[in-house]
Image (tube, rainbow, N blue to C red):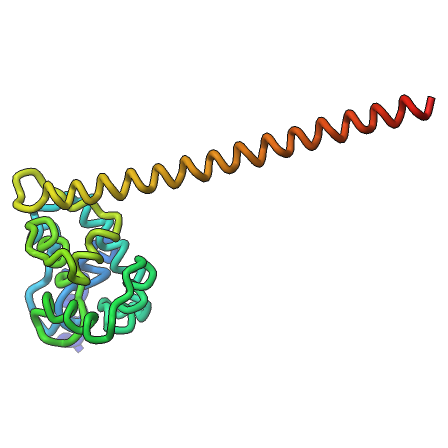
Length: 204
């Protein structure tokens, strides 16, 4: 009886097991390996990818979670295929496999969050071939990974500026179309009013 009481007190005294909080990128995406980790080192995005700001890391995490359709902490071949199609740069089956292969450090044929971040590290350092799928992914993802003093950041930044310019031009065209429609609607309204006025004159 005393032993049982001691064991109960011991359990109460220990409190909850330490671990990453549910709100952190580590707690949500874990990083490497399956849930539970089996004693593996916990991956800390902010600790390992110091070249990126917390905001950039949050943007990358949001993008990763958006295309992790299975919600298992990985982007597999089919999820990557969908991602590239949505970004407007569809790849062949072999192209997708090569994209994963380039950053697949644990050789499991899918992208963990850490491996996903490696894509943006390589993009910022100018280490991606311009015609590669990974370069297209980084360029079209709307995440600016240019960092001061990093090799290749200038050309990546220029590509980003071009993308912003194209987007603003597109917005201007939409705005002009909306203004034109508004003007046409106003003219139609005035014509109807003038016609009504003319009708009422004839009725008198």
